[in-house]
Image 1 (spheres, rainbow, N blue to C red):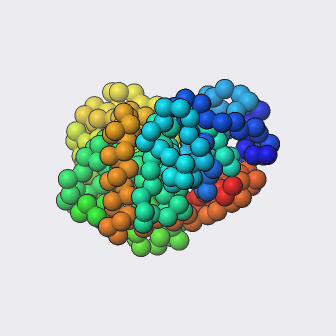
Image 2: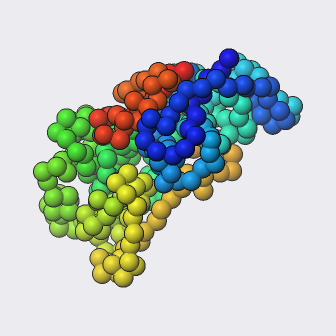
Length: 323
């Protein structure tokens, strides 16, 4: 019997329960994947708490890696035995095996371990679309990136260094600051004791930065706006501290600021484009420009404890579940 984490109602981590599930054969256009690692992302907390609505009862989790066990009729580019990962598709990755639409599966190349790929499906692809698509960095820029020691943040640190970008990162503790620096973050602001915007102005000789990537949201909104150059871009790519609510007049007052709230689905489709993104991400790994492994690992049955660690900001880097 296979097992999966299911929630009957929204709420705290205690609503996450491991239950037996029946997993059948894949139908047309589908594949059955046995997971080796399941990624834990902060967006999972949004679904668990009801900030992002989802049908209940239901599964949780958006991305995982594993091995294809079987494919259904009409599937030609994925075969049993292939190592694959995914980041799109229905919620329910918190499981040991599941049936998925084959067109969301991404082949994992030789030379990239499953454990590495598990940290890159959502997090590496997020760094790719933020830095290469939402605000395409050319090299030579100085940028502000919040939560630089998080799962996406540590990949972003390394990618900024590889692209020739000077990254100013924010973290909550001195310990996380050391980790961010070790991964290529040029300047680190410890938010518990430093003024973000003042430090950004100091580092940039008063000019500010052309772009801020802000996954924190409500608590960092004003600091992000005050760090931007006139006509700069605020990329609101997460709301871990609460939603961002902006009076557009404020954007004018702060320098005719551009604001965008990107979503992966609009940058990783159609499939051919998603595969191109993945090839670039895996290429960085194979070239030695990015190194990424899980920093925290929990058994699938301990998903609730993984959420507690994530929400209490005890984690550094990527967190995974082991089926």
